[in-house]
Amino acid sequence: MKLWRPVGLNEMALIFDSGMKAFPPRLPEQPIFYPVLNCHYATQIARGWNTKEAGGAGYVTSFEVPDSFNDRYERHIVGASTHEEWWVPAEELGEFNHAIRGHIVVDAGFFSRSFAGHIPDQFMLKGKDATQQFIALARHLDYSSFDVWFEIYTNRKAIYLHFLFWIQLGLEDIDITKEQRDKLIKFIEHRWAQSDIPFPLPVAKSSEQGREPDA
Figure 1 (spheres, one colour):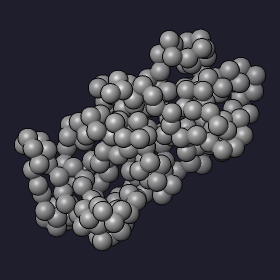
Figure 2 (cartoon, rainbow, N blue to C red; figure 1 turned 60 degrees about the vertical axis):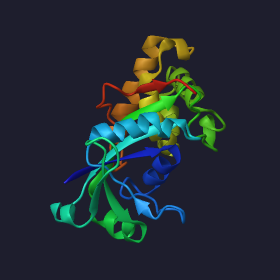
Figure 3 (tube, helix red, strand yellow; figure 1 turned 30 degrees about the horizontal axis):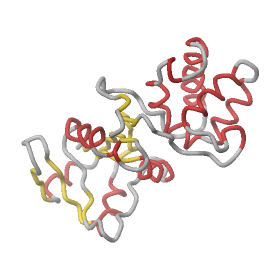
Figure 4 (cartoon, rainbow, N blue to C red; figure 1 turned 90 degrees about the vertical axis):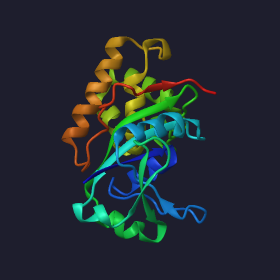
C-alpha cells in the first residue's frame, strides 16, 4: 500500500539522517502522525503550507507499507473528499517506521524565493546557501571533477535536500552558463548513481513543482 507524507526542510533532513528509512519522532505537542492517501493532497500541503515554514521548502515523500495496515488506523476526511489522512498515534510511529518497505522516496519539491537550504559546516561549501553551493560546484567542476565529487559525497545531505531546487534554478538566478549548469546536474546524477549511497536522488515526478513566491 502506497502512502504520501508532505514534509518541510527540517523533517526532510531528519529523514535523510535515517537513511531514508524512517520519519522522526513526533514532538510532545504532536500526538498524531498524519500520512495521506493521495499525492494530490500531499502536494497541496507541501506547496501551500510547508514552503511558508521557516525552512522555505516543501517535499512530497512517498513510501509503502504492508496492505495489512489498511484497517489498522483510522481514516479521516479533513476537507474535500481527496483530503484523506491516516491518524497514527505518535507512540506507534516507531512500529510504523519499522513496517516501511524499502526507502522513503522524494517525488516533488517546492521552494520559496528566499530558500537558503541546509548550510554545510565543512570544506568548500561551508557557510554557503543552496544557490551559492550550486554556483561554487559548477565553477569548480571546470577544474577538478575529483574535488567536486569529494564535496558532493562529504556534503551529501545538502546535495540531496537541494537537488530538486537546483533543477528548477533558472539562468537568471545563477551567474553561470547553461552548459555549466547542465554539466553539474548530469555529473551529480551519474556519480551519485555509481556511489555506495544506498538510496537514489530525488526524482522530479510532478510537473507542478517549482519556486513559490514569498508571502
